[in-house]
Structure formats: structure tokens, C-alpha cells
Length: 299
Image 1 (cartoon, rainbow, N blue to C red):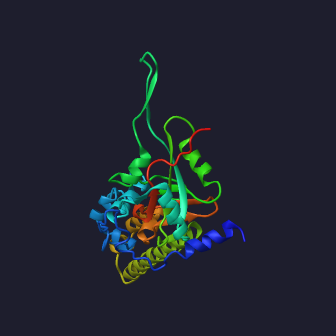
Image 2: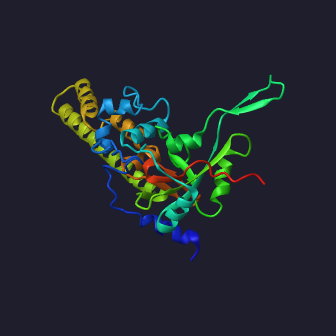
Image 3: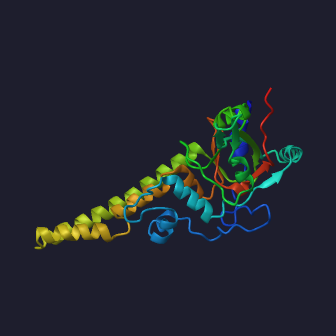
């Protein structure tokens, strides 16, 4: 059996009964503030204040700055920005050995560089340190990607080289090394997509049922002597006033349309894209980092 045959089974064994309320605490022991926050999309879409916190324009039923902003809002709200555990290289090596269900990963960055071409000798100055921000910063920045918004990392054979391609070779490149904690709740990307589709279809069935009920009521009203104009107004009113109206459909689709948002609402800490050897991590508190850079010296 190959490594890639074994790995998905290892992930699926990772604590399926993981607490969805407190999640992981920060490295300093602070309790996650996410306990008790609403996770049901059907309730969230009816709460304009909640949606506004996620960056949705509640009048137009969409996220004008992209769905990544919504995932960032959920991560912050549920306490998934808890600071990770930081270890030395040797201690992380030991941690991985002692916790065989932990998954080692690498992530590449390209930091910002300012160039001073007016100096006698042109100089370059690094003006950001994204690796340090992810490890020690107050905020956990969520990025965009085709498998949903989150923190993209590479695992398995060739993961260091794959992570190197994120930051591209050159000035400002950095690579960090970490591990996903063994009790992290991880979902396979394909399974996540299937559940998303099922939930969307189930919601659409409710929308269709409300529309059909509105039509039947208006039709009966018209057949019993009500004017066509009044029947049309009744149909529109019943369709718009019910809980599964077109506006609710738009909000629901927009809210769960990002795999990272859907996974976060379901209480997952990471998405496993096994075919690409990606972990899309949503909970910083579920990570253990090797402190500082893991970039190998140039040969």
C-alpha cells in the first residue's frame, strides 16, 4: 500500500467527535470566543446584523468584496484565529514522531520587497514577514483558492518543493513548516462538495414548495371570484413573505458558496484536497509551527 493510499485513512481517523464549540485554545491558553456562535446557515441568512459582520450587502444579498471576506469573518467570529503552538525544529520533529496522526505541511510566501535604485549601491529591503504574521500575529489571514478560501499548505512527498512554488524563487521568498494537530477535524474535499450540493438541493426544494403553495393559494382565490390582479398580488406577497423566498435563496447560495465558509460552518478545521496534496486550513489554533523560517539554504 502506498503512502497516498494510507494518508486519507489517517485523516479520517482524526477525532470525528471533535468539539465544535470551544475548538482549540490559543497557545497562551486563552479560550476560543467562538463558543455558542450561530452555525446554522438557515438562521444566519435571516440575521442582517450577522451577515453585515461577514461583509454581506444585506440589501443586494451578496459579498461585494468576495466570499473570502465572509470566510475571514467566520474564522474571526468562531475563534479560529487562535494563535498556534510554536516549537523548535527538533521539538516539532519529536511532536510528529509522538503524534503519528499529525500531518506535516509546508507553506511558501513571497514577502514584499522595496528597492532603492537611487542609492550608490542599489539596495533591497524586505518590508513584510508573512510567515511570522501567521505564526505570531494577532490575525489569521484567509486567502483565496479554487478549493475554497483558507490557508493553503502542501503535504506528503514533494511538499517542500510544492510550497516553494507558492512564493516563487527570488528575493522575499520564505517557507514555513508546521503540522496539523492529531485531533483536528478534517473533511475530504469531494465529500464536502457532495454535502454542499445536498444542502443546496434541500434548500431549493423548500423554495419550490413555498412558490407552489403561493401559486395554489392565488389560483384558488382567483377561481373563487377574486380578480386576476388581486391573485397576482397575493402570489407575489406569499412568495416574498415566506421564509424560503428568492432573497433567502440568494443569501443561502452566497453564504455556503465558498467551500471554506461551508466547512467552517460545519465545524471543520481543514479541508483535505488529497488529489493535489493540499490542506486548506481554516483554524490557526489547530496548527503547530516550527518557529521561524524553514527555508533551506541556497546551494
